[in-house]
Image 1 (tube, rainbow, N blue to C red):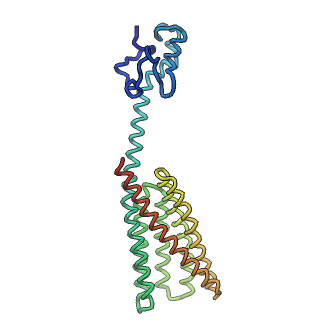
Image 2 (cartoon, one colour):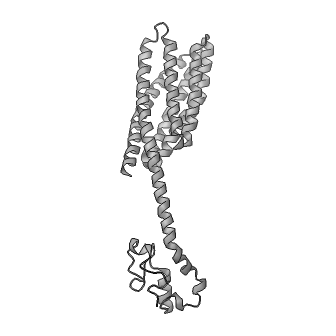
Image 3 (cartoon, rainbow, N blue to C red):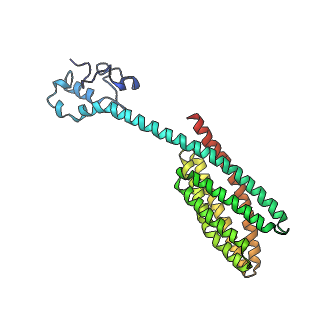
Length: 279
């Protein structure tokens, strides 16, 4: 007589230890949830094992029992592979987001310094060259993160396009043309900023849903600063006082968003680093 109802060997069963199975004769066996359907079928019909059942050769439950262990092993391997992928992605994000955090801080400091000395001869062009260099570096880091989210790839490309537009404003000789170019640069800037924040929310969601929602909400504040900037440029072309007010609102919103973004970047980078170390 078989030691199990289905004919499997308890000694060779990979599920016995993992599921703390006492065996069919004592259990009568356990499945992932509840009673073993094969053991229950045999006891209900009064069979000592499936060998005594006339329908054993075509029984779906009996056939599936032999592949259950293999399926479980495949599931474990898939889980291990997914975990390893998350760890690799977390290491990548933890490293480059922390670099992005420091780049944003340095960029803001440099912007403040140049705003104080922009009236000096030749400083406007120098400031624009350095600003463009920082923007390109920022975009390249986002492109580096494109394996974690396709949103970062689009953001990086659009930031480079916006940097080219902004640099063109410094070398053009017409103030009106410069204003038009700045206004045109808002389009790739808008797309880049949207893709960047959505990318942060996307990669963060799986580990910290609350942090992911915060990135999503910050996008609306960033959008407000862009809209205020665009309104300021349009009204300024017509010499309206509203242009100055919109520019002031844009400046305030930009400062607020920049500070919050720096905090979020640090927290997000730290979160991914800790996740990679723990797993």
